[in-house]
Image (cartoon, rainbow, N blue to C red; front, side, top):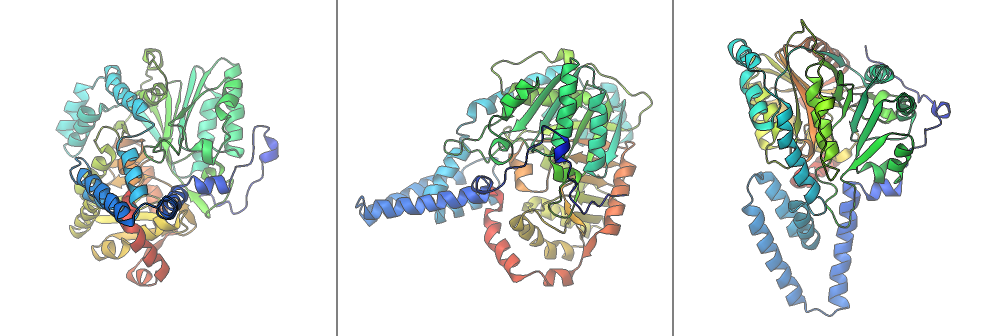
Length: 530
């Protein structure tokens, strides 16, 4: 059962590496909302300055503005591999805030500040296919016995270079508390290497406890590498964090350091969570290295997060995923061979496909997996996510499944972490309920899990939220499972969720406060950019 820790567990003094999380003005300014507000104010100030102090004729000012908007909108209209919703959002942003909107679009479209490293990520992904070879016998078995699963397995291998594996077992964790205990156990028993890639890392009991174990392993001769997203250096840890880690013997790199003035630092974040130990074990899921994820620090009630531990042949793909991103931060790539020894689990059941989603290759892998899961469900489809900011294609697929008699249930937080995201999610409620979709809110607190299950046969655990950033803009990862040993535990987790949660009905929708409806209507046109 879930653990409900209602009091903050103060263990900070027990760990010499623990520092208090930095919160305040810096975090607010460098949030997406804060940055938008600052840049809009700068635009207004610029317009006032040009008109009153430079004496630019208003006719030229407005005329030049109109011409610039026309050409930029023409470029956006003719862009390929961009959804209409995305184009509409850019149109509105440029129409309302032309100077800021045009600059933001140019920086985003041309990946200013990150072009070089992005190209290397793409190249490494292509080159790493040499380290994986599809098991043709396994594919024939899938095609003969599981035609439901074969097309998506072939797609992930052919398009993404992510092969299917057997000889693997998995453990599913219903809460981050339990997964962290397992991670610590495996770290303490590591012999060769520990690779870690996380979106968020923060000072506190969780990171301090893990860090002590990592330093101990370094002294034993274990190679430890840590890759974190660049947003942490602004909102979480100190700017000299990498030097601190290196001084402790931990190799540390930062993916896409944030330079707000000269780069589109809000785009294409490394949202992945991966830990690989000795090539024997791999972890993924929603859990980051921060105290709220294990309910040591309470932010939004009980924090419900999920994760998975893989043991066996499929760990190899997670090792390659990590090394690809790690080497994208270096001038030269290393030979992966010494890290790719596999440890098969004999007599295991099911098929595993670890996969990553790269926003730079114009192939929305996570979205395609999700749509395939929705469209091919036969009996039921359960989705658990902290956010529900979806496009028309996904929304229509979910509605069609429900109207076709599929038991579709969506699990969301009751206590949100972001008011705008919550308002946008609730904006879908009436339409989805009308189609027969059942919606459950996690009454004890906040849900951060990214778990999907269809018909008890196919499941997904990973980092992919049901929002635009995860499905289109971020680097994501996870594992798709077919008839594996952990699917029963995932089903059990959903059943517990339904018992604990509050099911939303049309009366609840009618009671949504007016300010949330107004907020959703204002934010909806820009949801793609959030």
